[in-house]
Image (cartoon, rainbow, N blue to C red; front, side, top):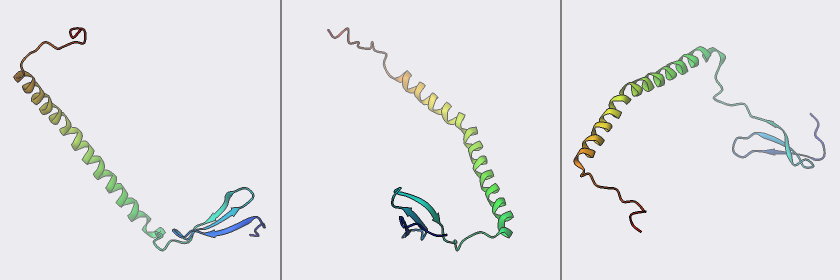
Length: 100
Protein backbone atom coordinates (compact mmCIF):
# COMPACT_ATOMS: atom_id res chain seq x y z
CA UNK A 1 0.00 0.00 0.00
CA UNK A 2 1.48 3.34 -0.98
CA UNK A 3 1.89 5.98 1.69
CA UNK A 4 1.34 9.68 1.37
CA UNK A 5 4.10 12.17 2.14
CA UNK A 6 2.18 13.29 5.21
CA UNK A 7 2.09 9.75 6.66
CA UNK A 8 4.61 8.49 9.17
CA UNK A 9 5.19 4.82 10.03
CA UNK A 10 6.00 4.10 13.69
CA UNK A 11 6.74 0.79 15.44
CA UNK A 12 5.30 0.48 18.96
CA UNK A 13 8.05 -0.44 21.44
CA UNK A 14 5.67 -2.45 23.64
CA UNK A 15 3.76 -4.67 21.23
CA UNK A 16 5.77 -4.22 18.01
CA UNK A 17 2.65 -3.09 16.11
CA UNK A 18 3.19 -0.86 13.09
CA UNK A 19 1.20 2.38 13.28
CA UNK A 20 0.68 4.66 10.28
CA UNK A 21 0.06 8.23 11.42
CA UNK A 22 -1.17 11.04 9.17
CA UNK A 23 0.63 14.20 10.24
CA UNK A 24 -1.96 16.51 8.67
CA UNK A 25 -4.85 14.85 10.48
CA UNK A 26 -2.90 14.10 13.64
CA UNK A 27 -4.45 10.63 13.82
CA UNK A 28 -3.56 7.00 13.40
CA UNK A 29 -4.91 5.98 10.00
CA UNK A 30 -3.96 2.29 10.15
CA UNK A 31 -2.17 -0.27 12.25
CA UNK A 32 -0.80 -3.76 11.67
CA UNK A 33 -0.34 -6.15 14.57
CA UNK A 34 2.50 -8.69 14.39
CA UNK A 35 1.74 -12.41 14.35
CA UNK A 36 1.49 -13.78 17.86
CA UNK A 37 3.70 -16.69 18.86
CA UNK A 38 1.04 -18.09 21.20
CA UNK A 39 -1.71 -17.97 18.60
CA UNK A 40 -4.13 -20.87 19.25
CA UNK A 41 -4.59 -23.48 16.55
CA UNK A 42 -8.00 -24.23 15.12
CA UNK A 43 -7.61 -27.88 16.14
CA UNK A 44 -7.35 -26.75 19.80
CA UNK A 45 -10.61 -24.78 19.66
CA UNK A 46 -12.75 -27.59 21.10
CA UNK A 47 -10.37 -28.07 24.04
CA UNK A 48 -10.25 -24.32 24.70
CA UNK A 49 -14.05 -24.01 24.61
CA UNK A 50 -14.43 -26.98 26.98
CA UNK A 51 -11.94 -25.44 29.41
CA UNK A 52 -13.79 -22.11 29.35
CA UNK A 53 -17.14 -23.87 29.86
CA UNK A 54 -15.72 -25.74 32.86
CA UNK A 55 -14.34 -22.48 34.29
CA UNK A 56 -17.71 -20.74 33.89
CA UNK A 57 -19.50 -23.69 35.50
CA UNK A 58 -17.11 -23.64 38.48
CA UNK A 59 -17.67 -19.90 38.97
CA UNK A 60 -21.44 -20.40 38.75
CA UNK A 61 -21.38 -23.21 41.34
CA UNK A 62 -19.29 -21.06 43.64
CA UNK A 63 -21.79 -18.19 43.36
CA UNK A 64 -24.73 -20.57 43.99
CA UNK A 65 -23.02 -21.91 47.14
CA UNK A 66 -22.29 -18.38 48.33
CA UNK A 67 -25.94 -17.41 47.78
CA UNK A 68 -27.14 -20.48 49.72
CA UNK A 69 -25.02 -19.59 52.73
CA UNK A 70 -25.73 -15.89 52.48
CA UNK A 71 -28.98 -16.23 54.41
CA UNK A 72 -27.20 -18.03 57.25
CA UNK A 73 -24.59 -15.28 57.50
CA UNK A 74 -27.25 -12.57 57.47
CA UNK A 75 -29.29 -14.31 60.17
CA UNK A 76 -26.17 -14.68 62.36
CA UNK A 77 -25.41 -10.98 61.94
CA UNK A 78 -29.03 -10.12 62.78
CA UNK A 79 -28.98 -12.30 65.92
CA UNK A 80 -25.70 -10.69 67.05
CA UNK A 81 -27.09 -7.18 66.50
CA UNK A 82 -30.30 -8.11 68.36
CA UNK A 83 -28.32 -9.54 71.30
CA UNK A 84 -26.17 -6.39 71.40
CA UNK A 85 -29.25 -4.15 71.28
CA UNK A 86 -30.80 -6.01 74.23
CA UNK A 87 -27.65 -5.52 76.33
CA UNK A 88 -27.42 -1.77 75.78
CA UNK A 89 -29.39 0.47 78.16
CA UNK A 90 -32.34 2.36 76.75
CA UNK A 91 -31.65 6.09 76.78
CA UNK A 92 -33.53 9.05 75.49
CA UNK A 93 -31.85 10.39 72.33
CA UNK A 94 -30.61 13.96 72.45
CA UNK A 95 -32.00 16.31 69.88
CA UNK A 96 -30.59 19.61 68.63
CA UNK A 97 -33.77 21.26 69.87
CA UNK A 98 -33.12 20.07 73.44
CA UNK A 99 -29.64 21.62 73.50
CA UNK A 100 -30.84 25.22 73.02
